[in-house]
Length: 609
Ligand code: TTP
Ligand code: MG
Image (tube, rainbow, N blue to C red):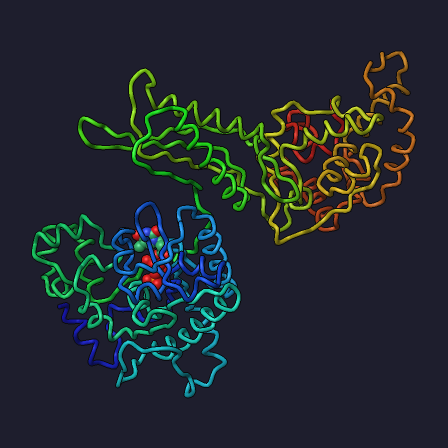
């Protein structure tokens, strides 16, 4: 064992090399899938319950565990030990994912970094919160919440024990909140690092928590019978260690560093030694949104194309639900197959991916949707990728198909981003749809004339996806409902898009009017817009009445500008004043305006050419 750490167990001074300053909580949901089912159907609570995927019981409730049901038991074995076992199919992970996200959201309310690990585990770094609380509590009265791994007779001089006691109270609050709001019982581990917090977490399960002080780290680690119990030691490292007769964590503690350095890099050898005595300085990394959203289905063998297509269609349906919940617009799709080589009795995975047009996706009232036609498009993309992966002139045998959206369009979420004002509930694809709606519902306006090419749908969605739902800033757009029928006006998104385009279009007419009044010899455009010129006196008057837009460039629709919230008006004025302050301006300065992407937001302030 590392001498330094042996000493620390009898010393009140923290070891030089071990930093006790952090306070980390690890929370693991009890029998997660089973609890999701029991929360949904409380009548299951009193029964022994197993969650079945294929022929395996992946987990069970604690009632079933009394009978000897273990995770990943074969269904047949489970029914042998517990004939009354109630089995629920757990192959559709949708509700488990949703529950997992809800738990994550609850934990984020403490405003500390939260790192999600799998579906039912989270690390929370409460170091700063503990420091804050230390300023306000009476240190003499700080008590531990839950269990202590081992009592300490000596107080560590760095104060870690007090900090961890406060962390234990925070852990208890977190667990209570998860239970009160979502109905899930959980376990928690509290320690000065992630390694010990995770490993001590199940020490008093279910529905309880355990704190371990740094001084007990090494002795606790020495109780682990297998080096594989250490989370960051994978199968290859385990194999190498075992081949050198290092099997238990205690073996690793006593293995000389020089010996380890012969088989691992210097850094790795030191890390293994540190881990073996409970030292770990990996930070809690705030979990962001997943880089890809995917689903896979495995089966015995499928060798017929139509069956593959059915499997993909079913996967796509489920995947679209996940993507809808995520809210981002996918722009890349990956197809994965696991091919079985019958002769070699082996299998391997192959994937292909390609871009998908964001115009397949629509955001209506904030929700991402895909029309039937869009789903057909996705299916044809999927089958095209499949055809590239499989030579259909030869027999094939698949044991898995997978689908994943792998890239997404980023949202513009800057606090004062202009997009946030404009894009509440805005529809990405429906810029075109709305024009079509307007075409049929309003005879007085010709939206097709102002309609951008279909590629502009992509341009709009590139930069201007719906805003963060946390900031429901609504712009009350000028309600000239010439274009919109009553039903359409009832839809805020349509109103906004419609009105934006209306103003843009009106400006076009205004400029036409100006042009024609200046030079009547010019041939007027032979377009339906001509029919609308009678409306333009109003439009011109509205524009002349603008009052906040004295500094605006001449191409700006003052009416639109004046309808914007103050903050956005200021933002735009600042941009116009100092073009280099925003890259948006590079797309929108008058000189480049006509070259700007057709759906650039600035477009709404200038006439179409
Ligand atoms: P675990 O946290 O390992 O198990 P658990 O939450 O069911 O039980 P415990 O009270 O011991 O924490 O895994 C979380 C979920 O992951 C579990 O409910 C089911 C699923 N799971 C699998 O799908 N496959 C597996 O091999 C394991 C172990 C779990
Ligand atoms: Mg669990």
